[in-house]
Length: 104
Ligand SMILES: [Zn+2]
Image 1 (cartoon, rainbow, N blue to C red):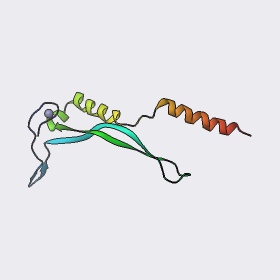
Image 2 (image 1 turned 90 degrees about the horizontal axis):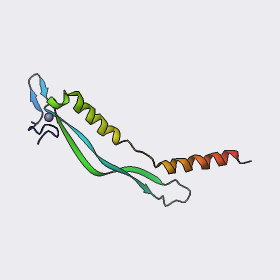
Image 3 (image 1 turned 90 degrees about the vertical axis):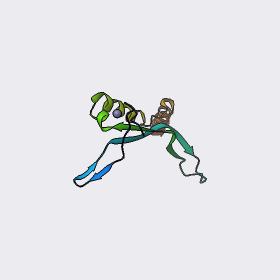
Image 4 (image 1 turned 120 degrees about the vertical axis):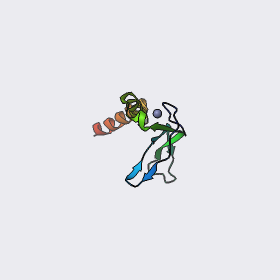
């Protein structure tokens, strides 16, 4: 196994008398997409969840973990994973709730 940043060989976590030694960290990431499931019951809301379509493991050795620019890159990677709703969808949801409030 290799570090995703500096390509150095990483070792398995070793247990010693004093504790254990970690040589690398793994970040599970990848591309996600919303999946909508129609509920068979008419009045029940449809279910949706984020599905990991292309899983990627980013391996970071302890040397790279000490570098601020690599830590920042990993943080950006995590931020990009956060689900983003379709903007149009959000707007139409807002409009319909406002219309209901004005009714009567
Ligand atoms: Zn590295």
